[in-house]
Image (cartoon, rainbow, N blue to C red; front, side, top):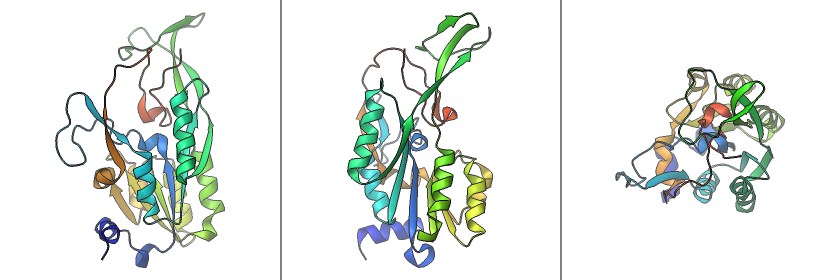
Length: 236
């Protein structure tokens, strides 16, 4: 048995059970899976200046081991070069790219509300506010999952977003199976609907790289996946 097949068998992903698999990668969600992880892919503690990042090349290689197609959803902004770089790289690797521009909404702060150090606070007639990035792909993912239903036996969701629970139930009623790969913070109904649930820690060795931390440029605030999976950008 090849190493790839052994790896997939250990995860429970087998062609006999799941047939033809379509992978849906909500990358804005994936980027936060290992955000606070202090243990590396080799189970060794990370150094103080190290952090884990979702490695696009490794992630594509992993999805390519079992999926006939991997679709990639992620937002970009013209003033955020790194977001554009990620989208371009995903396309070059072989992901089917799905993208749109990130929108920013104003969040007005109450007197008792605290922001993380470095948050860029602005003021207008309405009071003090910070800009929160918003760019979720729930609609696009749902449409693609239904539009391509005739092409797959199993939908593999790289996301623990609660909004996908109804999608999972919808496609299962039509004879499809669902694999969910997500971090520990997964919506109960989505996990319950899955034919196979894989915790993100189980695939950490296959999809992450260690990055040396560098001092941040500018001032930003990290709102994590609560902002559609694309918080943490700086846009002054």
